[in-house]
Image 1 (tube, one colour):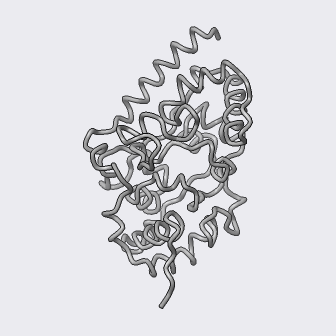
Image 2: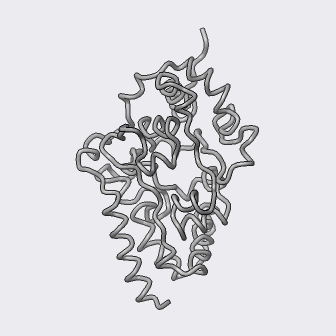
Image 3: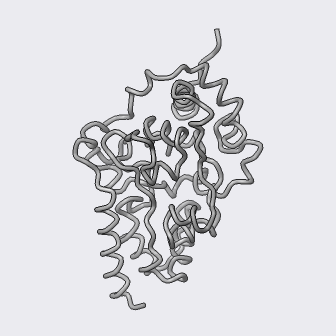
Length: 265
């Protein structure tokens, strides 16, 4: 495929994905700072009890994504202690626990809506990129995480044209779409949920093997799950009620994301 042809197709595909996941202006106004409203919901101690009974098996008792069963999941479980999590809203975390990730991305949430935005799945690029281009792009992205950039002009151009709008020019997950009009160089809450991956975070990139990332780029997140059978966060709404789920969200936010665990009196 010539550079001209893939560049043209890439532009069209990117425009389609932008239209499919438009973020309302109202959302940008609400998300200037990390969300606080939901923090008043949920009982911290109830959340701790549930987390240590159910969630720890995948996410680990320390929230580091390394529970007893973490190796059986592809991709590996989310790392709650990663700075990446500060960009994720409590509203989104609640929906993932209640309905499961795929149902949230498909908007099958029984009327529950995220505030001001529509959940956005990683789109497919298999129709505009050849398999060898995807594999070279993966090597280039792995270099970001390792701090050793793989020199390849074509991969760099593809990343700049297709990936940087979400993942940022330096792969830090701070592109124009997730950041919106929030100031550069400061913490921000992503206007895309889930937030685009920050390739510079080793603890996050270690969750993904190359086969998963290849199919993620080629067929997109939804088909990587439904067709290629990669794992995703399952629903727990049939096991936990809303009060219990909000308790888990609060416990995770305070203990792991904010790094301020409470001490029992």
